[in-house]
Length: 330
Image 1 (cartoon, one colour):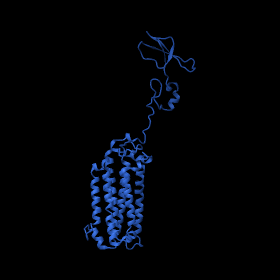
Image 2 (image 1 turned 60 degrees about the horizontal axis):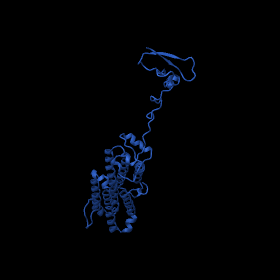
Image 3 (image 1 turned 30 degrees about the horizontal axis):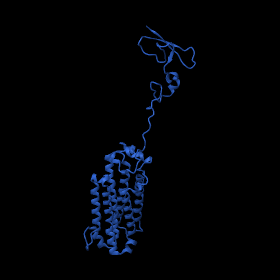
Image 4 (image 1 turned 135 degrees about the horizontal axis):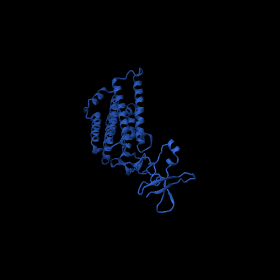
């Protein structure tokens, strides 16, 4: 038996009615229906598209509604946070328990990783201090090399150009490798390990690349001693300085190529290796003091700047090893 279903509008619309005949058990009408268990009409949810078709046709619907007519919480999902806490990152990234926040979430896309240059995180300082230095070093090195090739420097030789280029190339290698390492660390474990190794190797290259020109200029006025040092032999009972620097640099480079040596457990061992590498530079300095005297070395060989450099290296290694600056400000 067919039931009579009456449709009505709420909102003051007159003379608007519609009727449908629905077989028992048939489809439910969409707007309003007579309830067989009561004597009154009830209104079913009327969508905005049916009530205002002109407005909805001009603008697409931007959100869905559930069966109760309410917006679902999934319609506007919250954006992914730019940084996460220490306990939200993988174990292999948990290198410092005193830094509790500011970590970038893992991104398998290199473009997304590069976009982290646009906001603050706990690697921002590390990235930009190395990146800015790497960028500025290129024009600076070019200007220096052009200057020493001018007519006012008639005594500059090919070896001088080689020494300057050794230093500039080693510095550029260190700065660029460190910048990429600190930037790319949130990509994947494989990428982090690759650039961590290059970062540590870049420090070795810079250290050795600094001392080789230093040895050359310390003994610049003594061709015999200079040649003795360059052919890497022992002379007059003195251990050859360049051989020690090269040996320490090679040993340190070999150690950092071992994945286990780059883990958190071996942090202090890495520091000890770098300290030994830096301390090896004292041999040519002490040899120069013995040959030329302290006054000459301080005035003409740049010894005072080497000592400042060693002091900065030592301070940096100490902070890296014990992380004292992190204790008061976790």
